[in-house]
Length: 173
Image (cartoon, rainbow, N blue to C red):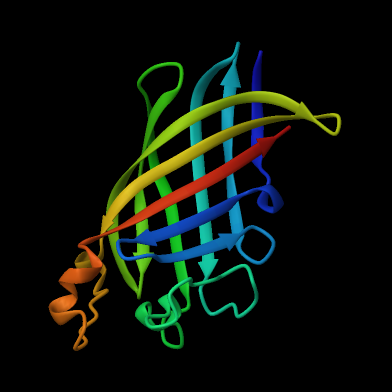
């Protein structure tokens, strides 16, 4: 029997992380998450994930640990407040390992990225059936014009070349 699970926005979140303790957490209460997973006989048939993250959000759902370089400024939040991802393909490798390919847009620049998706399992919470995924990937910040130059971080090299994206997504029936 094939079952379509939908993404539960309130139980999903995304973490963006760069070397040198630049960390931002974006929860599902103030950001848009959408998608589905089709599961047949406990096997994933296909999946689609889409999310839009508002980095212009000033409440606790978007936090930067380092006061020197706020990620909101790094992403030029006033001109480009939305980070979005829309999957274009899903490939199942084995029971727990899968790959998403999709379009990631940061600062109005869209690039195709590949993300790893680990199926974390199925359980029942408050009477609802749930499945969870952790989606991870490294994004080359220069591909999206995410440059930062300062006296302490010449050429931005001290920040690292990649941004780590970790999305914890929960689906329910």
